[in-house]
Image 1 (cartoon, rainbow, N blue to C red):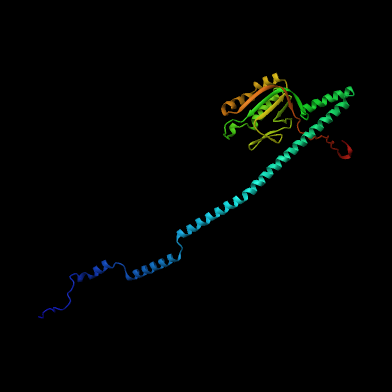
Image 2: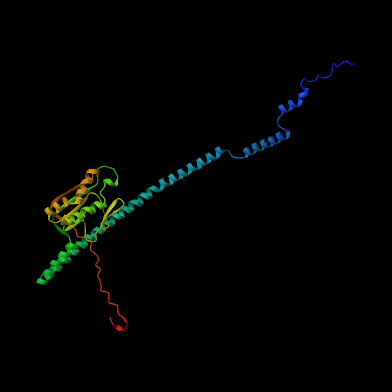
Length: 290
């Protein structure tokens, strides 16, 4: 029996369980470890080549800021030109309006001169005098001649507050109701802010403006009605339209008032284009028989 070699390496006590120790200390297969390492190197290289998200965001913010600054500078540069163009247009409109008003006054003067000459020629006979009276009555009804006399003045205005609500402003339907009530009360001639009303007149809303005879009028609105002051005022005061206007005054603060006037003058309306009707010829049958 030989004695054990003293210099031989000593065996580990857990040498019989080395396989379990290797599995627990190195659970990943070498092949899988190598593949994972390659993927990690590829990801690092790719991330080094791509721009960071923060850089792209910064570039976008700088570009948007530059665009806003350029737009603001251009708007500031072109603002004086736009203001000048707007002022020029406003001056042109004002000048044309004055020119139209001047021509309208000239037309009214010429129309009055023609009427005087006509009446002077017709006054030479009884038939002419009767015809002249009929013409004046027709002109009064059609509104093509200026008239003056006593009557009733109705005033309407928006609420004094700065509220822009349509309920606090006079509408076209309010003026329509007042005008219709004055006609029904016996008015012989009616005008709104010096716009004479006729059978073909219209009161309409166009945005924030009210058009009378296609001419814009603004508050306060003065509705003049020539007629018997007592009769017109009494009938108008008891009308449904006047009652509605009183309710609107209490609810929304509109201004509504009416009073008798001893003397008023209403201008003539724009001249109407006369259209004549012609009889339609009877249809004929074959052979020339009707």
